[in-house]
Amino acid sequence: MIRLATSDDLPVLVELMRGYYRDDGLPFDEDAARATMRRLLSQPQWGRVWLAFEERRAIGYVALCIGFSLELGGNDAFIDEVFVLPEFRGRGCGRQLLETAGLAARDLDVRAVHLEVDRHNEAAQRLYRSLGYGMRDRYILMTLRR
Picture 1: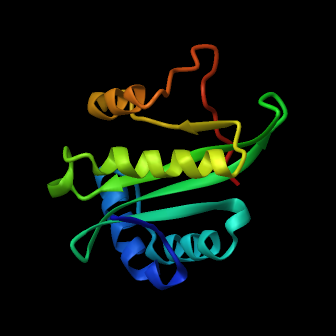
Picture 2: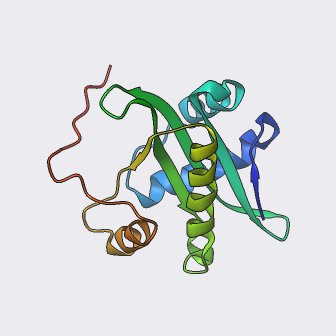
């Protein structure tokens, strides 16, 4: 089962985020993660988060964050994070989360959905390609942090 996350889900989302950051080798600041997720959940104009469950256990999530693109003619969005607990991978949960976010993006009149994938994560790349995502060969994603 997949459902839209609410502020009541914040504790479980933070624990899933801990797994995402661990698996990607990123530093995890629990207070910052909690504050950022709380803000996203309370300000839906910036996006949505969905939780996946098996039985009553939360096993994954996806965060769709909304932006705007002149080039694309309106709203665009990033799949900012998608994570499934390791023991539940390979069962279609990630696909279901991404399809849920994709349908919502269409309902929100999002013109394009972007995502990042580790160059060495071939399994994720295959999944994303099977859902219609493609490389933008002309572009390199660059970031200025503030």
